[in-house]
Image (cartoon, rainbow, N blue to C red; front, side, top):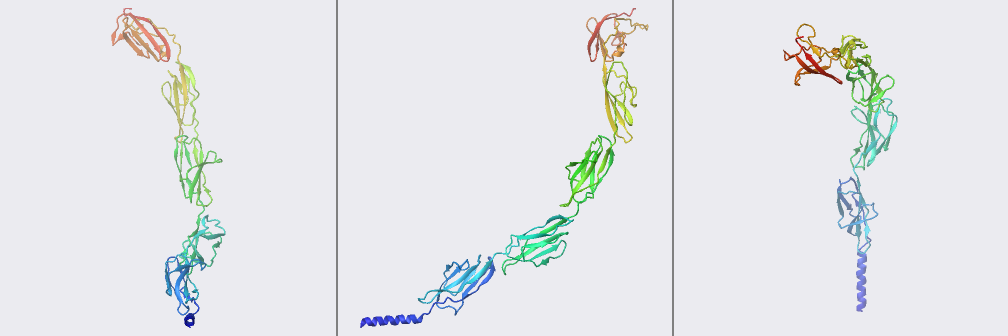
Amino acid sequence: MKSFSFFLLAFIVWFSVFNANAQSVGGTTSGAAIYCANDNSGFVNLDAGTYTGSIIRWEFSEDGGNTWNTIFNIISSHSYDGLLVSTCFRAIVKDGTFPEAASTMSCIDIYPPSEGGTITGGGIFCIVPGTGAGTLTLTGYSGSILFWQDSIAGAPSWTTIADTNFTLNHANLTQNTFYRAVVRNGSTCPSDTSAFASFTFDSLSVAGTIASSDTLCPGINGGNLSLTGNVGGVFNWLSSTDNINWLPISNTTALQPYDSLLQTTWYKAVTQNGNCPTDTSTSVELTIIPNLVSAGNDTTIFLGQTIQLNGTGNGTALWSPIAGLDSITVFNPTATPTATTTYLLTVTDNNSCISKDSVLITVDLLEFEGLITNLFTPNGDGINDTWHIKDIEKYPENEVFVYNIYGKLVYTKKGYTNDWQGTYNGADLPDGTYYYVLRFEDNDKIAKGSLDILRSK
């Protein structure tokens, strides 16, 4: 009897429990939202009256509900803050012994900030003929393209182009124009503008004018040619000595120097403005005035000979040095040099241009064969009063030395001219025998011997 009562009591308890709990119902959540990254906070709620049982936990998923992670929260709302990626939330409900049930999920969609990106296209063009039709391409952007915009340089505002594609076709452009795209990621992120794509147009290259042609003296000239009125930078200069064949000069400045030109030379300047074709200036001519000067052919003569120089030229002549010449201002002077001499002919023409040429006159010394007097009578009677050496005037580069019998030098002279009267320091030397030495420049031969001074004869 007691055993029956126990089973009856157990059945009553089970029946009461079974009738007190219903099936678990997860319910409905609310609070879904859209935010930009890092700029979010709020709540997801399990709406009252929509669930049956007790909340035993919350869960979140970062892959759209494929996998879930536990949140230890048993109240009917869950807070979030600073989410970096889109995240979904749900509540897990359990009623008594019935299996747990999941609520609907509410997702917080997180969008990265808008990135305008970069436009491929544009550049620098010559104003003629323009860019031609082309395509701009937006790369590196994040979000959706809301529209494109363009602006003419100098215009106060941008014009909207209703195109949401990442490419934009443009027509032929002939003026400075800028393009950009406006991009927004999600519905709550601020829009962002791409980097500009610019179409910049250069004016046509203009070579300008070179100042100026000139007439110059050969070899003694110098200066600078100046380029003005050009549009664009100097690409290089050109020079020519025949006005047909041109050589480049690596000079990118507006000044082109010249110096010591010997022949007529032409110059041009080449300029280029941006991407426009180069332009070449009109040439200038630096005319070199020819003055063909000649001093004649080199010649060899013997000492004492005379020769006529054969100079030619156009202008006024001037010879140097003066020694041995009968004139220095004629083209054909007579020359009687006593030593080898280089004569320089300088000719100044009507333009004050100076030209020069030289001629070498080599003087060969004759072998000395003159008679040297070994006796003279310096007594003032006008007969045989000086020591005489025959033909000594033909050897102006001579030098004589006279010694007494004791070896003392009593007389010496360079360029002796038969004028010694037997004196020493202004006084007459005594009669007697003396010894001489005669030397010649550029000649190893020496003449020597004795001479007598006899004043009583």
